[in-house]
Image 1 (cartoon, helix red, strand yellow):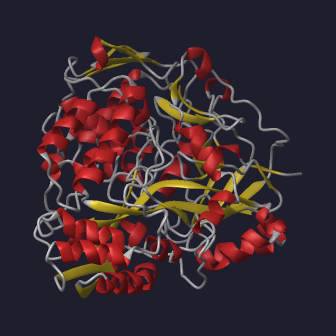
Image 2 (cartoon, helix red, strand yellow):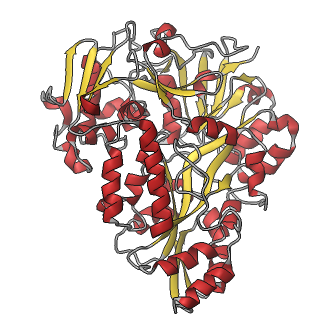
Image 3 (tube, helix red, strand yellow):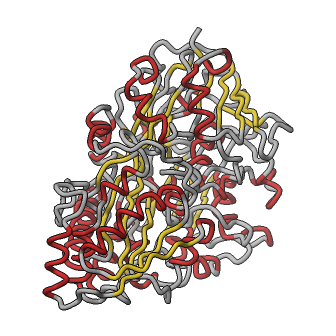
Length: 601
């Protein structure tokens, strides 16, 4: 993605808007990057069903990182200031990386030293015990888990953590658990379950959320929920200490539960923040984190280009520096790939985002028109705008290679002919009697869309369309295309999964009942058959079967209805200094894993 501050299931808004990568170098070898690193193999490993771990597999401590040594300060270059620190408000990628060091949840995604992922009990003893056909989930808390002030974490704190999610001031975090508890698909709907949150003395009924003792929390849902262990591992469900909850003010001074805490007074908007060791964190209770460095000195307002140049130089303080989320800028990707010394200090991997071109289903009702556009679309030009090798990989599916259930498909031959089949497109358009049809193609004014829009418009014109090119401002782009009465025919967007399940992809993007101003069904696609299948699969409690069914549905939508044509799967390359150890790409975080880092002696 071209901007790390992106909601995973909230439109990948800045992926195609902010345009952080300044294009100065292109390559025709889009597949070269994927073949040249380990990321494709890593994605294939990840696609195997991520298991829900039992108590034995959730027991700490984490296996030592080979060669790791304690001590030292790691300097971290970040482009963006953290907009939120309250766990309930965390939902974008850079905040997700930070949260792994500061906050613990009931469950966590664990990446072991062999590259295998699973969902473990974090504060809980295991990933959860389901009953009643998946309508009830029970969690028991581990012994010895504490906040940074030494107070034991109890079920009272967990109840408060989830109940405060219903408060009106919580506006930026995930809403999965709240919606499932309320059996509602909307924000306004779930808030009715506990208006204002717990601050007026009211609580969720025991029939919804029960805490029978200090060590137990039980979730009761009206419908089966198969993905709860995944959802609970999101940064937005980090535990909040009830006694220290200052409501809106908590966003500036949260209480840590992970291996690090915020050094008091260190957070300076636009400048930086310092993390120091949390002495109350017990490694014996934590299977997924380490505490090697003494301190993380995080600096804000360091651009991708700036951090890339500093880390490539690898001099003085840059030797012990890294970025949690900044990626190599597009102009430097070739140098990194071709310089063995720099490449040895890089990590690469997929992000969960898939770029697409939307077809406005309310305006382009004839599927033949959509097919003509799809065949003409030069997806290679779209990818090249983001830099290769390393910027991405050509896409044939709506579902990312990182997601369970993924299969290689290419129903419109885009991978075989990524520059577009203009002749075939024109033949389809002629047969439909639509040669010369006016087509409004909209895109934003970021560097990348401006670059590839030339090739897109040119191919569509050659295919026989009368193309009207419409440039939209980047900062309001998604607001504009999110209008149900928008007057555009074709326009790009991107989407990323919240966890490795298409449950967080297909429903928000293709459920016709979610069409509304500001919604995320950008193609305005509404199929009663698809809606019905979304409801069915959403209640499937067998993760393996659900994954297969989601992919089948995604493939059917693409082949039969074609509301969008995929363009590319996002990837990124990151650098670190020569004295940084433990740097590995975490496909769940879509970035370097902060919990494994150490300073080499």
